[in-house]
Image 1: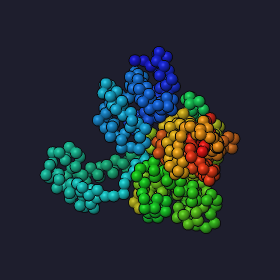
Image 2: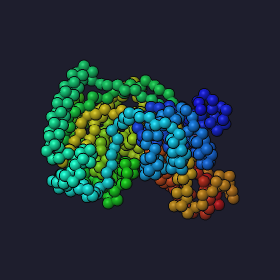
Image 3: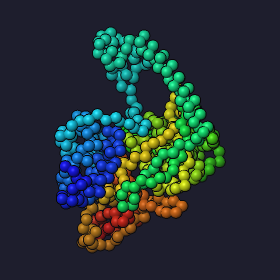
Length: 507
């Protein structure tokens, strides 16, 4: 059925019409399985926020999945429906979708699969630090090759199909591949150099979301230096282990989201903003300018640094737990530097303090320069015992959540978590003054301040970091209530009202 044309006939679809329109708009432009599941996660969070009742939200979600406009972009998922359930249950980012996965699978069973070309910005990959020795992995290089050769001799047909060729064939293919790569690098470098002489910047488009949750496209010029195929040495990779132990200790993160948030949180709590007096320096250079930063070990020794020192240290921490690639953005106007990492189809900027900010929101709320933003993107990786960098392009302007406010369900979960820490019973009756209202706290939450405006931190919410946002909000509630401790509070409640976090306390 066509919902965007006739949703007024169904009251539920009428209420959810804006969420439906946003989903169709965003999902149509999404080019990855991960991205589609992220959009579905955002959709169910919007429905829960609208209907305040998960069973009813589930019924509306089921109706929406019968809409032709929704089914069309989801056809690509039908080809992977056997893996959707395990993917949803295994990835913490899709946790809000778990309660609705049976509805989704049922809808996908009625959809005719369609093959669709999938494109991704280079997303961060994450590997757990252990060696898997099963089937020869984790062995030294010579042992692994001997293992594969023996297995090939046992089952030549199946291994040839899997791409495990005999040693002579593999070496020949490696040589041919290296020759082809060298030729390609020479050609790309020649073309890029010629193009750079005539056009020093490349422009990409930019979209912003309105404060009411609408979505409008603007023509904000963004200038990015051209990529470079050449990698430059930054510093020795032996530094990574030292930074890893300082930032993560001995409890290593279990996923990209946890690693990103923890690195940003650690830098915020432990590094003081300011110029360091002593320490070694390193240089991050493009064809036009070189940026000088503290060596990450000097930043750890001094426990202070400016924006580019934060950026280098946070990027090093992420590389130390096998998250790669990591990007550093250097801005000319205003003069600034920050880290960026791609998770799924969304790029997040890590700018000294939590939370991570979607690149889209970073331009909308932080940079705010409509006359043109000039910046350089450096991609950091690890090669042959060194952390290296090269210039790159960053094209991940997709938003994972377009409402620019935090769902009330996040505040509710955070409330229960804070109440447990404080030993106070959560009760909605506290908002009504029952049994007796004693305090109403307008929480002084962190603000995102720019030269012209100040925004509540809630506008930066994204379901990608849902778990971390719950803990972050719970800590804010705990700090607000602790100032009122010692007065015998028995009940508490919290809610967002006009982007203000309000906490009610009663006896």
